Image (cartoon, rainbow, N blue to C red; front, side, top):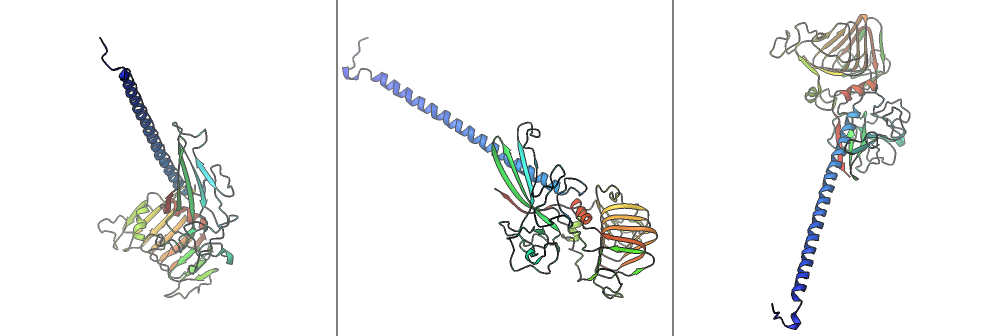
Length: 422
C-alpha cells in the first residue's frame, strides 16, 4: 500500500505507540506500588493490633500474678519486716530470688516464644511518688514516717522527691478512686510490651493488688470493748478499743491497748459491705429467731459448722475462702473442731468455741464471744467487731498483717488506678 503521509509526519504512529506504552507502564507500576504500600500498611496495622493485644495479655498476666499468695516464690508484695520496706522498689522474680529493683516475665526468649513468634515482656515495680500523675500517700519520709497508716490527715503537698512507695487507700491525690481508710497495700507500676514481627506497643498501668482493706491494725479492733474472763488468754499484736457501755476505754489492763475512734464497719473493708458480698464463696442467712423465713438456710440452733462447705485451707496455707453469714435474727455459732483460712463476715452476733484454728479476718457487726474453755482456740490474722469482743478461756489471738494481706488479695479483685498506652 502506498504511504500517503507527508514526509514530516512519517514515524508519528510509532512515537504515539511508544508514548502510550510508557504511560501504561507508569500506570501499571503505580498500581503495583500502591498495592505494595497498601499491603504493607495492612501488615503494619495487623502487627500493631497484635502487639497491642499481646501487651494487654501481659497486663492480664500481671494482674493474675499479683494475687498469688506469699507461700509462692513468685509473690509480689512486701511485709513490714522486709529489708528496705517502702524505701526501694523491692520485687520478686520468676526464679524466686528477690532482685533489688524489678520483676519481669513474659515470652521474649527463644524457649518461650509462641508458635507464630509473637511475644510480650512485662516488668512490675512499686509506684514511687515521683510518678508524673502526682499520686502519693500521706506519709512524709523526711520526718521518718516511712510506713503505712501513721498520718491522721493528708499533707499540704506531695513529697515526690523521695523513693517513697504510694500505698493504695490512704492517698490524697486519687480523688474518689478508693474508700479504704488505711493504705496498707502498695500500688504497682506495670509496663507491658507486646511485639509482633518487629512492631512493638507498650501499655502502662497503675494497679492496686486488691480493693479490700482487711488490715485490722491490731490483733483485736473493736468499736466496743474487750472484757476478759476465765483461763489463759494471749493477745499478740495489741488491741484497739473505742470503749462505751459497761466498759471504759482500755480498762482491761490489756498490754498494747490503744484508744481509737469509731470505725465505720459498713465501709472499713473498702467497698460498701453490700458489694463485698459479691466476692463471697458462700453466703448463708437467718433472718428470725427460728431461722424459718424464706431463703434462710441456717439451722434453728444457729450452728454453722456443717452448713459451710469450704472453710479454706489453714493447714496447707494454700488458699482461702470468704464466708458471708447474714444473721440479724439469731447468733451464729461455731463450736466444732476444725481449721479454716480466709475472711469470715457475720452481720449479727457470733460465738466461737471448741478446738478451732482460723487464719485470716473475722469481721463481726454484732457481739463476738470467743470461749476456749478446755480447748485451744487460735485466731491468726485479726479480729474486727462493731460491738463487745468477750474472751473467756484458753484463747490466743495473734495479729498477722501478712496473712490479712494475703486473704484480701485471694478474695477480691485488683483495682485499676490508671491505664495508658505509650
